[in-house]
Amino acid sequence: MKFPNQKITTFLMFNGQAEEAMNFYTSIFQESEINHILHQEGGSVLHATFTLNGQVFMCIDNNNEDDHPFTPAISLFVSCTTEDEVEMLFEKLSFEGRVLMPLCSLPVSKKFGWVEDRFGISWQLNLPQE
Picture 1 (tube, rainbow, N blue to C red):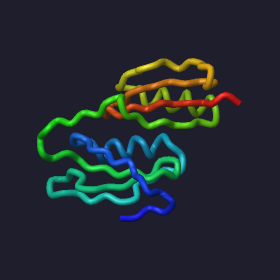
Picture 2 (picture 1 turned 90 degrees about the vertical axis):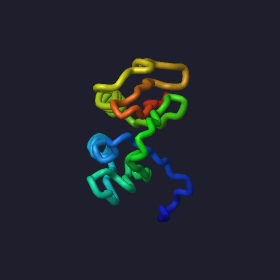
Picture 3 (picture 1 turned 90 degrees about the horizontal axis):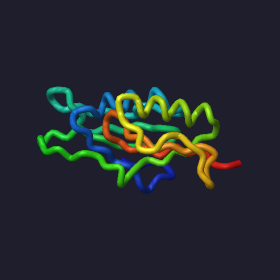
Picture 4 (picture 1 turned 120 degrees about the vertical axis):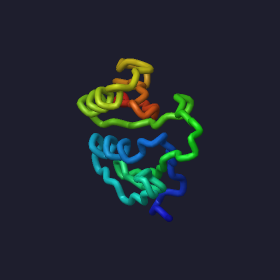
């Protein structure tokens, strides 16, 4: 599967929550949609692609019963354009997750926050200085 203008695609493996995660993410980011889902017998996701803010992602459900949790050592860095956007994303992504760094100003950011969502994905949310 090829994606225009994108040589590297983030690929996420969820523990049975891939479709729920895609629905959640596409509901809060603009220019977002679920592009394709291939289900296995029993309903889990064998392969899927979705787009967030024009960026394509791939995902599957882990079906081998091994637990492979996500870690904050790798995170998705989101460049926001307004305070409303960074605050909305911070609120929605941290709900039922955890705040790794509360929203604050930094020398390089008007507003920055770091959260782990309820699926275990780590997000750095940045509103750059003007």
